[in-house]
Image (cartoon, rainbow, N blue to C red; front, side):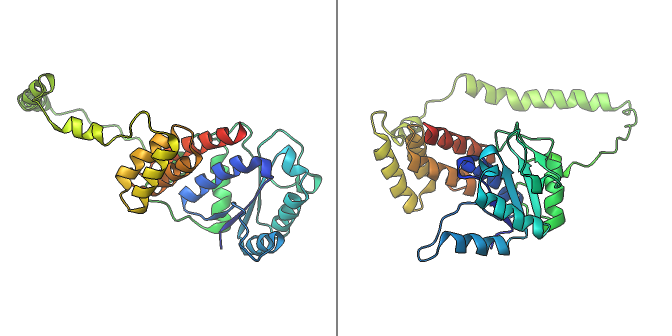
Length: 274
């Protein structure tokens, strides 16, 4: 079961997904995508995950404040003293929850954007859940773990330092100048045409590019698959966008890039609104 239960109104799904990405990158697990397994009812799944969670985050908006489901979920979190309220819109929170300290993320729009309220949110999460299991690249916001640095005044450089600086400059000229000649007048190569042939044709439809990329992805040829899937994603193919998000998130075929994940999530959200 997930560490965190994320409560929100259905109209705020994009905000929930963006916050879930941030928290998951820190190393905690979040239950937010409310897909109901076959044979189970909605309230059974909700209750099971809500009871198992060690923390309940509620996203307060005009829509969620009017939702009985959200208020019931928030009440469970408040009763167990594991509720973390987050204000996404400038509204009055339901009366019974106004005593809880609230993180105000009203002007937060992107998963790559730092917000001054994040340290407060991070501190409360660690109080409830303990320190997270960081991903290899560490937390997405350096400010979370910011520690004041100690400034030590450096002693003046020794007089012989200038000699070594001059010698280093001369050595760098000897090493760097010959390669520069090859850059200005590059030798002929036959590899560029082969690379261009691997790119999707300009007249190929988004669906064709997606199917080709999916076939390569299923064959675990991730680098080749990414080229075709990204081409389809730029043509607003939702299936391709989901694959590109997955590949950037998992580092399949491309370097793991948290900023790119956020960009494509925002684009997908924009397409859903159209």
